[in-house]
Length: 369
Ligand SMILES: O=C(O)CCC(=O)C1=CC=C[C@@H](O)[C@@H]1C(=O)O
Ligand SMILES: [Mg+2]
Image 1 (spheres, rainbow, N blue to C red):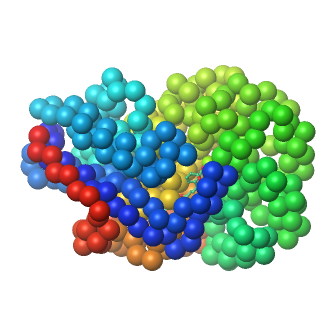
Image 2 (image 1 turned 30 degrees about the vertical axis):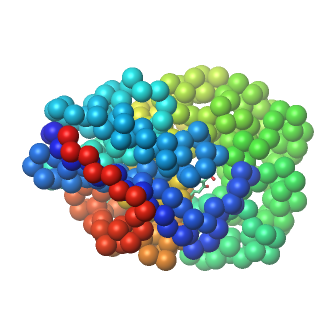
């Protein structure tokens, strides 16, 4: 396969509900859609999930455009790609910028699967026909609002609830949730808001019987997390700290976590996500698919990834209607009784609604290779 054309679109879409974490609130979601076209005219799509502000990782929507236009796409010029696993190696000389790499690599995966006449799920070796889905609820204005969101989410069948915590919004919040919803599969994501100075408080969170606590300490740390994991019963789930399969190997070796959240963008693509899955599987560490408030194309890639066997925990892969009035794919992704039925259609399994894409496009770059 030879990639002949690449179209980079920057989109801006308004989320139904603002999403708040320990680092800020977002309602307008900027992201990229990468379209690749091969020499036979097959098309593939990937989503660039970096935010407009570099608060989750160092990347932004605009740094991704720069990386993709000026470095990554030129590296594909004149190259025959036998299998999409090769793209990870092609981009290896470029450091980090994982979300930019993943956006292009995922478009190549989709294109290749369509060219082979197979689903993306088959292309990566996934087997599940249905996947379990949880929901991530951002910080809310007050407990009543949060309780209402949890209640609605349980009514809709979501298989686990993730809430955001930060210093000052932890003990009381979790104890109120537990009082009202004693048996709910519950986890808390701190997005790096604590340090080992908070050890005593973090130990107390064990009483809430959380499935796991996500990224309590620094975003680039695995050493302090290992110290913390030895002193708390609740499994630590690493998110921000794991950027590669090597990071996963080291974190597991140090005992820094009991679970890993895999995000395709954060780790630089589908190939690296599969490697992390495999390392965790060999080490008895369960994984689940994290979310980046994606639109339909990114979401479709996440669903395919989740069909791998060691994705044994529900992911942050809620359906289109949890985020958008109208998604950019057809049909939209729907969740029934807390599960998504994996599409049997080729590639990502959904049609990209180019009219909707255009309606939200604020910048477009066409590159002919
Ligand atoms: O529903 C989703 O897409 C998951 C949302 C979510 O929890 C997150 C998205 C992006 C950055 C973070 O705030 C957070 C996370 O850390 O997992
Ligand atoms: Mg997280």
